[in-house]
View 1 (cartoon, rainbow, N blue to C red):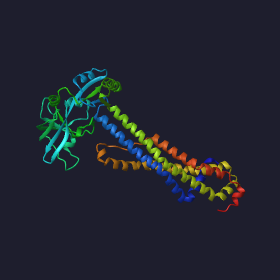
View 2: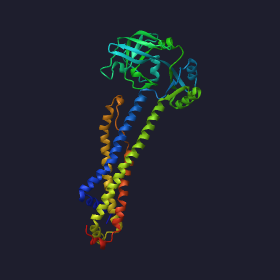
View 3: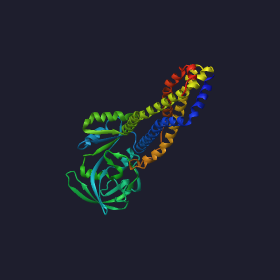
View 4: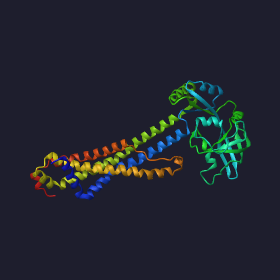
Length: 399
């Protein structure tokens, strides 16, 4: 008998006991269904986050912020003279409280030349109105969340509005000012250090210079090319040591990829329990099948079946269950990931992301082959036992 005939015979024999076969296949489905659903969702989220970062932030950007104190003008000059540095944008951050009819808003003024800022952070743009003029001391552009507060109980600001603010000075004193909102920023869900651009007030470089002089809160460095980023980061760290925090957009992307890889490994370890369940389900089903079909095995051997053919028949049954269970689990998991991803995206934490599930063909094939191997291996012992049954004894066997 040909191997293909044995496989067809095994398929028919398997589904003569439909209930048991279906329950076993469901036990196999669970593992790949969970792994595919979660992995596709997490990979989709991470890729969406990376795309968002690289869309809003130039990949050649490096953020330099002091851990304590300030950056001096001398430090800014030295950084700008490093090999591979194309541009340096120093900035000031100033604590401020906004007074509104609905209450106070504690936030931060980002004092910087907005046109220089847009060179290094191309995702920043004026959605409405105009940017503060370069020499103004009372004009301000407001972040997206200040125009569109997440909660209806929070006050909202708008272009053309005059706002009263209290600015915290370096000596701890406070100065009350009236500012004119000239522009509103588009959604920019990337932080500048600890500063959320969406919650910040953007003012001219002049206001920061007036208050802090040459004591900068940080700098955004633009490398000449993507290949220069790691070299510039290394040189800045070597020059300034532990005095500053140095991070690049590439660091963030690498960090996200590392976290996804770690998560996938953790998921695989946790999901190993479902693989054990699948193994035991197939093993139990096949042992039961061998016991119930002992007389059938004896009859087949009497009719000329070789022992290896009997073994192949039972191995084929286990493999078929793995193929069906693995296929259903992976395909069902991929489609389930759309619903799971929609659930995740409904969280305020991921409000700026527009993600689609990602599960590569290589991942699907690897998982599929792994499930088939587990099922086949689980059927190995019962298949071997079936092949060792003596025909004469088998024909006299009573269940």
